[in-house]
Length: 99
Image (cartoon, rainbow, N blue to C red; front, side, top):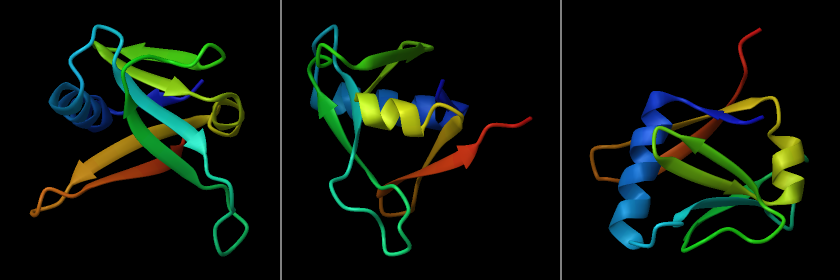
């Protein structure tokens, strides 16, 4: 199952709280329709008021991340990290889980 770093937890909580105030609001990750330039999987993220019925739900330290089915399968053995640059731009990085 996808896990989140402490940085990702903090960033997701800040983003979701700033855009949605519902009790079920979270960050939804879904597979992008086209692969990256090297054939790698790509993902899209959106803040949503609630999960879709088939979404896998990950909760950590009050943070909710919803994964659509294909994204959940692709990210099952990964770690989500996040950072914010000096201009406030958020970036997410997918890392392998430590052995």
